[in-house]
Image 1: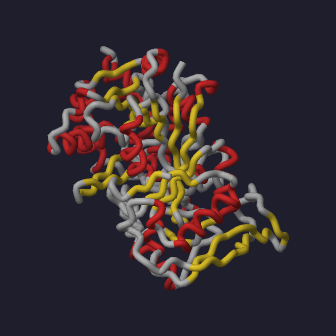
Image 2: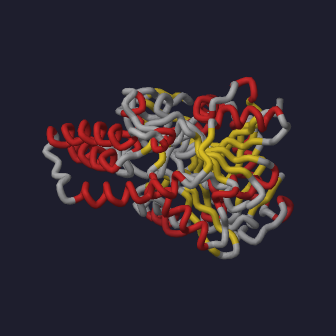
Image 3: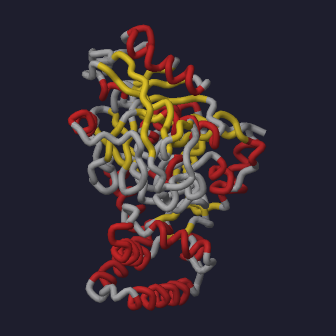
Length: 423
């Protein structure tokens, strides 16, 4: 059988996965999203126009490619409908090449309200939720009370829906959360959006993907968020509610782990993070502001300003290890084109002791240890080949490769799909 390749983020999300999926999609027959929900914002740019996808796989702009929303994804029908309408306005016909797993769970209106209630109750301990209802939906999935895509075709769907809504209301009442004004409007809009979801071909995606692989079709599994937000291996509790690592591709799509092919890991040339939680290399000075300004570091889903800092090789090597990454795609190096020197974190001092391991405790006192490299001080956004890149930037790439023992196979030098160099 054909192997399946995996593409995922190696940091805290926002690494540029959408663009890289779009760029490599011509090499695949199928792109399948395996986890997360509309808390993801995958940005793509071509023909001078920026597009943001939240649920739909980033291969959708290639009309001859099949796109699948896998069972590990949680779907908000309202946001799904909005994305579909945007694609139709572009002249695409997503019902032709987008399939939805029957086992994917649904985000209900009250999941969003629960998200807001839980986050508000945490006060200063809040994790920085996108308030899209992701966590409560995965909670219901784990508690075995959630609703799935297959349920919307059931004759007793409304009874199931009202029963779960009733349970959610009881919780909201306990939290003292007033939903009387918001819920009726959300509920009506949610029910209306189901017509769009029902118009799509809903499949047993695990069977379909196995058939594709047996036929020799090439499949790319697309992840959302990033490794350091993984429920198991991120900085808990400042994490997302799903498994963002490569292993999640197999549970999120129903595939045999023996079918693993390449794992492409996306990493920014620096680090960013949205929301709360540890960020050892975060910059609070003018350099951090410059990274945010030049890199346009504002959340594609929330619009929130991202925290910015230097590249963290301790965290990166950890992400490479738990994912079995075979190839690195380095993005947004063009953002750092005006720096005289560039720091890279190569070790931590954790509570005073030197280490190259990520600490499990999120309250550990971490001091980054830096190596300083010379900046390239030239605009690289127009470079089309690796040979055209300045020697100082090549040194930066080589240093990453030497430290991680992993090749940097793709270099992105701008947001457009054309601003990509393959090595």
